[in-house]
Image 1: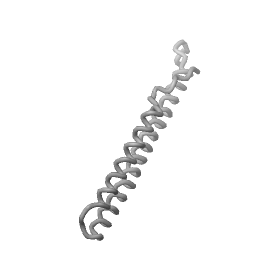
Image 2: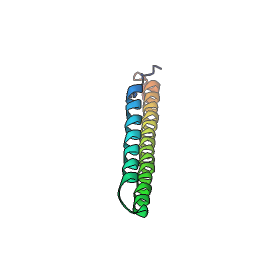
Image 3: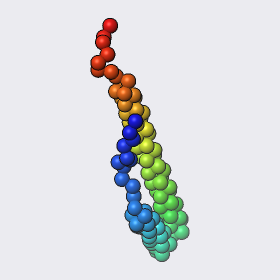
Image 4: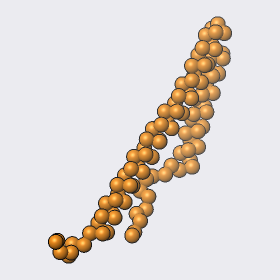
Length: 97
């Protein structure tokens, strides 16, 4: 049985670094903006907490989407393995009884 190479594209190290730097810069800029904003401390606290909650929920959403895609890939591989097995066992010259 021949195996096909994995056709899914992998992210480069540069792309991962760019994403991490972009995330860090945006989170830092938002928290600095909240800190230096002229508002009551409770308003600043509310906005800072909202920013942190949005950040953690974005990570959770990204993980859920990734897990769903991986599950679909596993189901596709299982279905493909079943089809490959059926095709390998099929003998077109076998007489039907």
